Amino acid sequence: MDLPKLRIGKVEVDIPIIQGGMGVGLSWERLAGSVAREGAIGVVSAVGTGYRHPHLVKRDKLGRPIGSVNTHHPEALKKIIRDAKEISGGRGAIGVNILSAITDYGRVARDAAEAGADLIISGAGLPLKLPEYVEGYDIALVPIVSSARALSVICRTWKKRYGRLPDAVILEGPLSGGHQGFKYEDCFKPENRLENLLPSVLEEAKRWGDIPVIVAGGVWSYGDILKFLNMGASGVQMATRFIATEECDAPQIYKELVTSINEEDIILFKSPVGYPLRVIRTPFIERLLSGQNGWMGCVSNCIVPCNKGEEAKKVGFCIADRLGLAWLGDYEEGIFISGANGHWLKYQGVIPVRELLQILTGKKEDPTLRKIEEELSARASS
Image 1: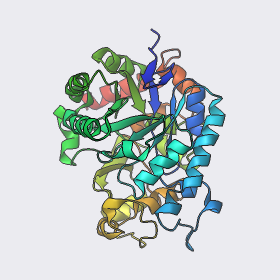
Image 2 (image 1 turned 120 degrees about the vertical axis):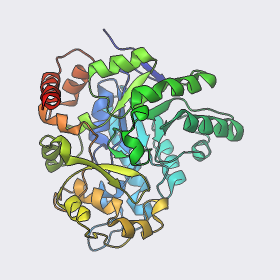
Image 3 (image 1 turned 90 degrees about the horizontal axis):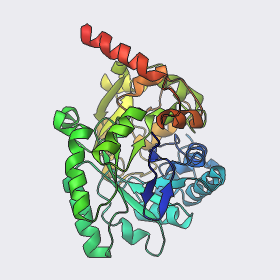
């Protein structure tokens, strides 16, 4: 069956799929623009944009952008957004993912609006002041939540302060890559599975006027998309499968890594952001787990909860430094992100964005499904 269109405020796209924002450097202009060109929503990550255009920023001797204004650089972000729109050819839509925990959050949100982004997606905390930062701009606002309660807080606050509501909401379950909106132990509880969280969030969204609900975190296949649409979701957000695409902005070593890992190579551990972080086991992660501290000092002041490096020093790494090193292709020292189902990418391989979206919309057979079934069957019988 053909999937329905997705409407978020004034934004309408033919395919109800949002490509999730992935930073540093996995989803910049090439991936986001290519996804939009096929009729879906491509999303630029606003994190660490100074790495994309280093000639625009001030850096230290190790090549790290200095200060938040260089790490999350205004002109670099604007160029990425404009380049993504050019690649899209006017199709689909271009969104920007902005962690509400980053330093200069308000300024970065306004940078995105000024550059002509169609929507802002924001999580890693409750973006309670987001409408204030983009006042005067016609841009859709989409918070990420992990519960009906979080959506209620955002709606009540936005309605009272700004006289507006979210144009849509993304419900993200605890199987996503990167930072989770749950405590570590809560990520594994059955009640926090995406299908169990969705009914209460749909009910809360209906209370505020049928706000569209998009689901994320572990969505893998066309069958998954149909399942959640039939449950009442308006669309899905997916990120991990897009890493293994030719157009993904990640370096080749990143793509080789995600298409060769096994389930036990994907783990959760503590981040300076204050949330559990899902990553791939690599040499640096193994050293961290053995008790070594890889913190190299704070030069970026990239996120507020880190308190200018205090939290990074405690957990043993700066998130901006290590994600930046991954984008630069440093397998030994970088941190590489994956969703909980990322080990299934070995059955996909690296394919064009167009082919992936044909698979996800049911127009082409999914080569991963039979292999996944065999893997799950073997695991159940062992």
